[in-house]
Image 1 (spheres, rainbow over the protein chains, first blue to last red):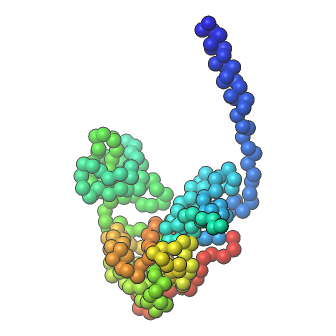
Image 2 (image 1 turned 120 degrees about the vertical axis):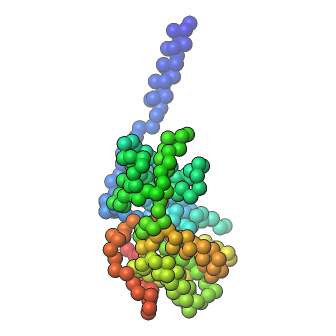
Image 3 (image 1 turned 45 degrees about the vertical axis):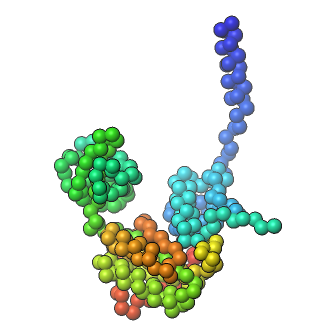
Length: 93
Length: 185
């Protein structure tokens, strides 16, 4: 009985592993290569890392490195304080 | 010698212990210096060290006299007008310099649309200062920003791009460099 239970659990585990989404291939984006410092005043650049609604785009979409993403996130948050970029942009109907 | 990482919380044991940048280690608890791991920033001079029993962390009081490079952004109410904004710019330049700070650059973006409404205002006059100063100057600036009714928003951040040897500007005949948000890139 106990053995059967264990096997069942293993089956479940295996199935789960199969269902897991394979890691996405990263797209290399050329313009990211020379970003070594992100200035919060650089609205143009920050916009590229934001959605239309004003959210910070996830790294898996922009292809930024972890370091770049940290810099971007910090810069966006600073820019929001002085109203250079929006916190949220509502959609008006 | 032991490694420490400092938290961003205030020390519950004593007053006046400032949050500090990461201090990697203190070679001796009675020493006066600690190496600072935050990039190229020089080592901190310590005036007090105390070991917090619960956290097993060393808290360091930063001396107020330490000078760093900062960048300050101010947004003035649109109602002050061009001249009012300029006067405001000069006022805070004065605050920085009179406190012993050194201005290295003043930028003006002029009147600009805000990304969202603040206090029913859709626009604001943007100014950016770069300067070197100690903590006291920062505290004084912030205090005055809060009192000043012409200031819509303000922001002071460490200027990480600064080398620390930029030539300083004189207060007399100070002119803000006209510019705008970076184009291109």
